[in-house]
Amino acid sequence: MKKIVLSFLGFFFFGAVCAQVKIAKLKYNGGGDWYANKTALPNLIRFCNQNLDMKIAPKEDFVEVGSLELLNYPYVYLTGHGNIVFSQHEAENLRKYLLAGGFLHVDDNYGLDPYIRLEMKKVFPEYEFVELPFDHSIYRQHYRFDKGLPKVHEHDGKRPQGLGIFHKGRLLVFYSYESDLGNGWEDQSIHNDPEEIRVEALKAGANILQFVFTQNY
Image 1: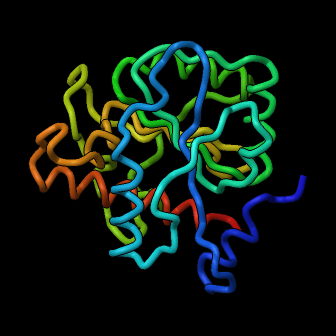
Image 2 (image 1 turned 180 degrees about the vertical axis):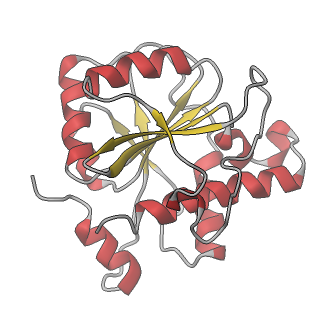
């Protein structure tokens, strides 16, 4: 299948079109709160546009995991606290999207981990999540993170990990685990996190988006 994001990436960096790049939040079934962190992506987009001169539309779209509309987005964000269920069709659709050039960022919002691991095995039964080394380029974009992801919220007190699913050397899925980047992106009034932690979370998110728009195209 032809890579779906080439036109987006070329336009993004060379300003060849007036339309802005759009990113999306993934809507899934199973009862989990896919809609969580409502201010997170708009704040991240604003940070990227102001500090890295990205041309991203100011608000995210919402796209269902089984929809062909997935193909319109170079970056799709999945978060929540609870259960996730992919049907066979949805798993196949997500797999096609990712193999065609798309990118999925899974952001652990506490309680997500056991469900997302099971469902991603439906999408890629042949692959496991592996931890990215700290010298991976996702940590070496505009901002440098020599120790990997920042720790925003405690959760179970485990260290934050950046996990990935790779296919032929290309990172298709990035899973920010035990970090809670999305909460760090939210309005400060929601979680009352220290400003320095919020800024670190936003920088890490900006690196992820910058990586998506530059890797292997």
